Length: 122
Image (cartoon, rainbow, N blue to C red; front, side):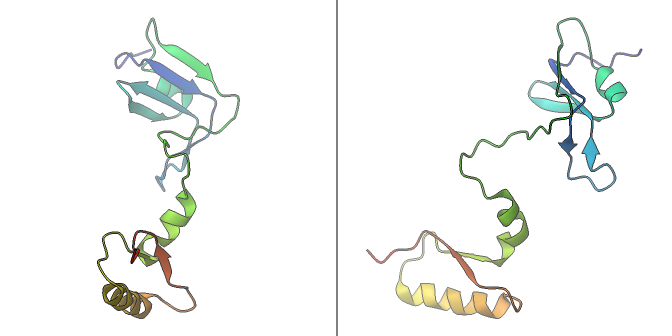
């Protein structure tokens, strides 16, 4: 086996949703210095195995990396981010209403206009 360099951690026999249409689900990953160095098959990840590499068998479970927000609306954000109106830093009611009108014109039917927090008159 060819070794491509040490990985500190290899996760095997898992499900990793890659967001890569050509390879949507990987079975193993290798991680070095907090970064993915291999995403793909078990054989591809194991090319980074060296003495001291920790290997964890996920037994078919899904791993979700890097989500540190304790209240994350991942799907909603991905599907609707460009359709939402953000009111952070809006200085007045007039500005808020102007922004709302502009967003209503941009929002395709039958979608609702979504306003995401931030603005307050008080």
